[in-house]
Length: 299
Image 1 (cartoon, one colour):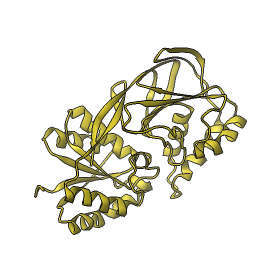
Image 2 (cartoon, one colour):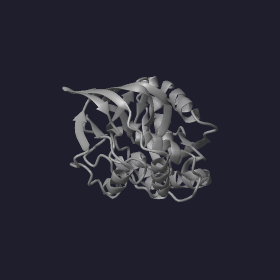
Image 3 (cartoon, helix red, strand yellow):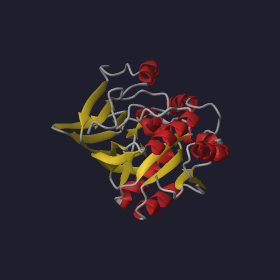
Image 4 (tube, one colour):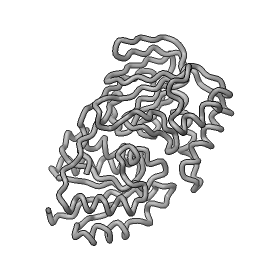
């Protein structure tokens, strides 16, 4: 094992601002396994991506990110932009922690840190997992276009310490504001569709928004993306679907379609909201999405 300290990039804003309190405990847990580490606090949005990019370019073997899905999103883009072989370790200290669920990482951040330290100490080989690309950005857990992206944008403004429930409150606010059903043209595999939709979610992992089991069949290492499309629906119908969506029981509903894909294109009549790993993207109307099999190494 290298004596060089492993960089641990900590997002102090993760978990609605509570993650910054964990730095010393992370150092102590790694120290208990004789693993030197250096905690580096991110200073702004995009900082983790740039630091991981530099670490990957330097030829380092590993980097650890302590944060939520937004931090994992930045790290994924830093690694894949650099075409580096650096392995990524994850300490989930965010709100939704959707990627951690997909990777079977303990959601208790201290247990996750201890398990990660044990794997590093034993010299366990990294796990190869898939990633995705949307236009010129990469994602680890999934992409959303339409209503779910609108909900994600609403949830981001809440600072309440209520965990996943912020996304449920965001749904109610989004419904009050109105359901968007843009006209789109979609192409995937041999399917071509033109018409309105409520949302298109392209999943690498099965969870979105912390509590919504949107693609229960999705796996992050199967070489496929899972496309969930909701036809135009009313406010009342969305409320009826919510309990099923939380439990992953919505698949098979008449207004929900599910396909396993490798490539997906969508062109909207006008710019629409979208997100990658819960990070809101600029309004845009053209989306080109593909799977990148075994693109990431996970410690």
